[in-house]
Amino acid sequence: MRGIAATQIGQLARRSVLRTLRQPSQIVPALVFPLFLLAVNSGGLKDATNLPGFPTDSYLTFALAVPFMQGALFSVMNAGTDLARDIETGFLNRLALTPLRGAALLAGLLAGAVVLGLIQAATYLAVGLLAGADLAAGAAGAAVIVVLSVTVTVAFGTLGLVVALRSGTAEAVQGMFPLFFVLLFLSSMALPLELLQTDWFHTVASINPVSYLLQAFRSLLIEGWNVGELALGFAIAAAIGVLGMTAAAAALKTRLVRT
Amino acid sequence: MNEKDERAGIEAEGLVREFKNGPRAVDGIDLRVAPGEIYGFLGPNGAGKSTTVLMLTTLLPPSAGTARVAGFDIANEGGRVRGAIGAALQEAALDPLLSGREHMRLQTALHGLPKAERTERSDELLGRVGLAEAADRKVGEYSGGMKRRLDLALALAHRPRILFLDEPTTGLDIQSRTALWDEVAGLAQEGVTVFLTTQYLEEADALADRVGIIDHGRIVAEGTPAALKAEIGRPTVEAAPRDPADVERVAAALAPFGEATSATRPGATSVRLAGGESQLADVVRALDAAGIAIEQLQLHAPSLDDVFLAKTGRSLEGAGEAGGGEPGSEEMETVGAS
Image 1 (tube, helix red, strand yellow):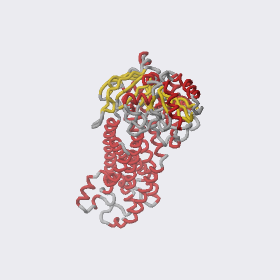
Image 2 (cartoon, chains in turn yellow, green):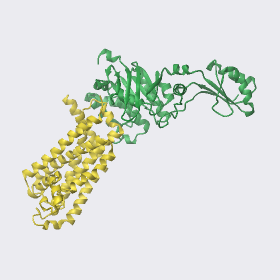
Image 3 (cartoon, helix red, strand yellow):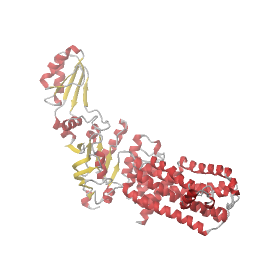
Image 4 (cartoon, chains in turn green, blue):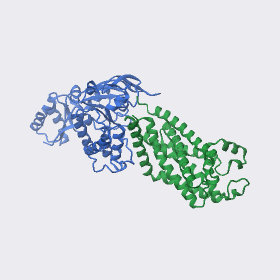
C-alpha cells in the first residue's frame, strides 16, 4: 500500500514539476517582479537605515527578505491555478477514476511549488548577494534560507489549493492574489516592527504572521544565527502548511464526491 | 474479481439525480446492459445522459435508486467499480502541457500497473489508436480527433471490462468519427461492454446493439435500432418531376403504393410505402411507364429521429438546450432522373 502511494505521489509530482518547468509564465513573473521591487525599494528607501534602531546600514540586506515572501505568494497563485484548471478541464475527474488517494494528489501537486520555491530562493539569494547584500549566517545560512523559502512557498501553496478546491475556477484563485499581497504590505516589509510609528499599522503588522516570517529571513541575513526567530519562522510556516493541507483535504473530499 | 463479476454488465433501477433548486436531471432510469454489448444512450443536450454516466462511474452519488456496474454497487463499492471500468467523459480531459506518452505513463502508474508493464502497455495503446508517431508531442498540439483517441487509450490503460464513452465523437470530423467507431466496435468484439452516450443518430445506429432514447431524464424508448425503427413504421419515397407541371401525374403514379405524406422539397410528392422498401423498383417502373421525367427520387427509411419524434412529439435535432445533433432523416438511396 505504501509503495502504491509513493508511486502515485511520485508520478503526480513529476507531472507537477513538468508543468511548472514548461510554463515560463509561472516562473518568470515569480522571479522578475520580486527582484524588480527589491531594486526599487532598496534604492528608494535606503535612507531608512539612518533611523535610530534600524538593524543594518544596508537597506538591500534588510529588503532582501521580501522577495522570498513575494515568491511564496506567487506559489499561492501558481499551485491554485494549476489545480483549478484540472477541475475546470475535468482532469480531476480523470484522476478520480483511478485508485488515487486524496493525500497523494495534494502532495503531488505541491511538488511543483517545491521546484518553483527552489528556483526562486536560489535566484533571489544569488542576485541579492551579487548586488552587495550581506549574509551574516554565511554559507550554512544560505542553505537554511533556501530551506525556509521552500517551506514557506509550500505552506502558502496549500492555501492556493484550498481556494482552488473551494471555488473550482482559476479566475477565483487569481482574484485572491491581491488579497494575499495585502498581507505582505500590512507587515514589517518596509521597516522593522519596532520602527512602525502608526499605532493601527503597528498592531496589524504585529499580529501578521508574515512579519515573523520576514524576520526569520532577516535574522540570517543581518544577525547571523538567532535560533528563536528562526524557530518561530519555521513554526509559522509549518502551521500555515498544516492548516492549509487540512483545509485542502476537507475541500478535496467535498469536491471529489466519488462514492 | 470473481467469476460472477466477470460476467456482470450494467444494471440500474429507478436511478434518480436531483440537483439543488433544479429539475430532476435523471428521473428514474431502469436499464440493463449485457456483458459485451454496445449500449447507445441517445438524447439531446440536457437530456440527462452525462449525469447518468457520472452516476454509473461513481463520480456522482445518485439521489435515489440503485445500480450495479460489473457486479458492484455504485453507492457502496465505488472503488471496485472504478477498478473495473474505463471512462472517456464528455470533455477529453487532457493536460495540454504533457505529451501523449506522459499521459499514458501517469495513467498506467496511477492504476497500479507494474513498472515493467507500463511502457509496454502505453506503447501498445498509443499504437492501437494511431498515436505512436505523435506520442512525444505535447497534447496542446493535438487535433480534436487525436485528443479523443488519446482519451480512449487512457480509458483502456488498465484493461477495463466496461467502457463508458460520453459523447466521444462530438465535434469530430467524419474521418475521425469513423476511426473512433471502428475502434469501439473492435473493443466490443474483444468482449468489452460499451456504454456510449451520443446525440448523433447515425452513431447510435451504426454502433449500438441496443439503444436507449432519453429525454428529460427518462428513457422513452429502448431496443435494437432496427426494432425501434420498425415499431415506428414504413419507409417513404419522394419523387420530384423534372417538369413542375407533372406534379399531379407523379402523385397519381405513386398513389397506389401508399398514403401521401408531406414532402421535404417543393414540387415533390411523397408517399409511405405500404409494402416497404421492396416496392422501390415497382415505383421506378410505374413512373417510367407513365412517361414522367424524374429530377430526383429518394427513399427515406424510418430513422431514430422518427422514433424520438414519435415518443416525445419533438425532433431530436434541435431538441436539446444547445441544439446539436445530426440531420434526422437518413437518405438511404438516391436514384437519378429517369
